[in-house]
Image 1 (cartoon, rainbow, N blue to C red):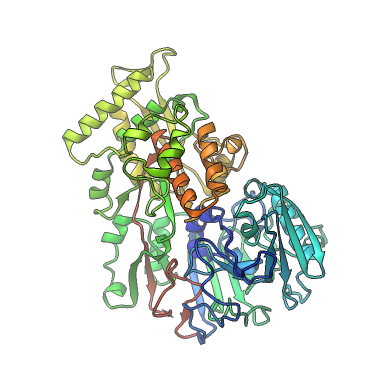
Image 2: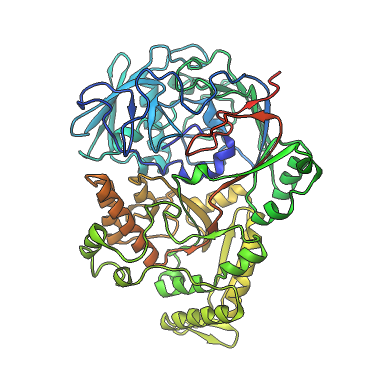
Length: 614
């Protein structure tokens, strides 16, 4: 699901933005009746005439300034294409057909669309646009805008093209109605996910810019975009800073879905090349809010005066992870021959000493990831039973035999004896795969080539965790090197699969679906821009994804998801890393928020407000 995330959650949104798959639950008794919401698991909690979301402060004051930060740079404001470095926070400029509730798992209510109805066989969905919905220039949002945005996204973004592959048609079917048609029936997520992409103005993109040049939706741009959302782009320093300004004339400010939200009068993002410089800017009071990614810094660097006297507050909140499964990992690229053998990939995991890293670098603040749906009940555990086992039995012979009798566990290190034993097991696996130690180097017995590879990173902040791993690999003869590049180069290499090993995160929702094809499916292995970073092309994995997408009920979906998790783990496609499972935030005491935050989000900056709005 594409949500209007703020820049604060951009790093988290980057890993979940297309990962949410929403199954449809009818809000009325009949599929042909217009309905105000779509949901998964249970019917929507809020009735058609709800006044506001239950976790907002409807009387929150508007105004004030919020200064945020980001690492890297940007060169693009066009969020419908796969090119360039997209600027943080740009989603606040645009509306979507539907908008989500952070108190419910995968539940959305009408935003640009006042209602929708779905074919009984789920072969199409129709949205009815609100008559009052307008762009910032006063022109109405039309079905033509929706059609233009959707077709542009599919044409110019590999990610959108994959996610919406089974949406084969979109057409105007009424003065304010637009219908999406599917090439599959009974795919429960399709009617909902088409309500989640940003709608852009066709007339603006087909016009000319301030210099008289024709605009081009297929290209990056730094021109302030026209939108229909609560904010406009107020100013830009290319690559360095962007400022968003709250619109007094926002058409949707009084909608129940928006009451109590979008309270800051101005939101800015300043970019930093160095995370340490970024943190020092926060300490100095030049940045208002900081999301802490380093466990060691969280444990040791917050003893400055403003924290002691209460001017800076610190919190560790689990909300955002209550419905988000995480796989953070080092990912060997199986498009490289040296990583094709699963024994090699398993050996790489034996060389990773999480316990030592956690104690000495993170002060015990991390947990080892052991599932592609880590932190949720979708994660496989123990041995397969019941329907999960039946699903795996259907694929016996096509999946690793260990899925039936050996639960996945990561190697445990932390003391010299355990580390030595893990490295011995790694060498044994590598020997079975055709590699042998010759002196201090690991050599392929057939080609006489040494094992050497590059670990590509996008931020210096990752180096502290990776360098000890490189030293561990050296002990078994592997020459691994770390290369940290700027964000533009990293993104380009990532999209073209030009790497040996990367550090990445996949975020999972509680309702997995079509996005799994983009993560692990054979069709995505050669598609530029896909998130199949490992290069997985396995018919058994493809079949398990199909079972998830076409599961007739929730129990079947859970069983198939756990089976997929188990097979992915057994194939050792990644070296699982770690996560804290909570959002660690620090902020200057300039803000307020509702006493009760939403269940599945900290709501920042969406529902927070300035104490002194000015």
